[in-house]
Amino acid sequence: MGFWEHLEELRGVIVKSVITFVIFSALIGYFIQEFNEALRWPLYEVQKDYPGLAIDLGTIKIMEVFSMLIQMCVLGGLVMSLPFILFFIAQFVAPALTEKEIKAVVPLCFSAMVLFLMGAAFGFFLLMPKTIEVAVNLNSMFALELRWTAGDYYGTLSWLVLGVGAAFQFPLIIILLVWLGILSTAFLRKYRRHAIVAIFIIAAIITPTPDPVTQTVFAVPLYALFELAIIVSARIEKKRAKERSV
Image (cartoon, rainbow, N blue to C red):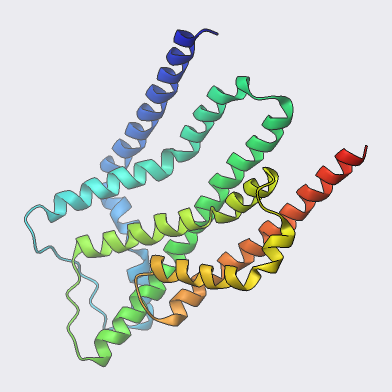
């Protein structure tokens, strides 16, 4: 294919990705009340342990509700359309890759999607309720009245879901660097303690509450993924050494 044919193919990928994103965003907009109810699950879950907790959200700005709706449709549509967009991109680049590269890239893309969804689910079902619980306890300790706004709630939820989903990608970066020969498992094992410190720094940045409990809850699976990355990287190095010896 010539240069213009490649541009035409790229245009097709962009068009299909945009159409898919718009369809999912429109579906969320159509079922916005049901989607909004589903997003409030962390509040309902915490309320089970705190029956007196008022979970009614409000707004303090005229345009806040519009920003909330746009945020829900755009971010929700992006998350739901992401697997399809990755598939379209894979279709575009596949003809340019060798069979060996395809065997490496396809599992990498699939793993990236799975890890992102795992991280998003972890942030929604575990970290968000834990964050709300800590906030409730701190407000109660200082005898403060809860006046949470919809913008604040959905902003925190988006930050946790997308931030944790993105953070769960870091083992793939490690594996990719080992595959490229930039890092080695010996290096990773040698600086394991430094990695633990870096993981807790990442947890402190992403988690909205400063309490060590929430940060530890987030740091534990990150460290488990780091150890998993070392295991996979060791297998890559072993396979590479075997190929060189043949």
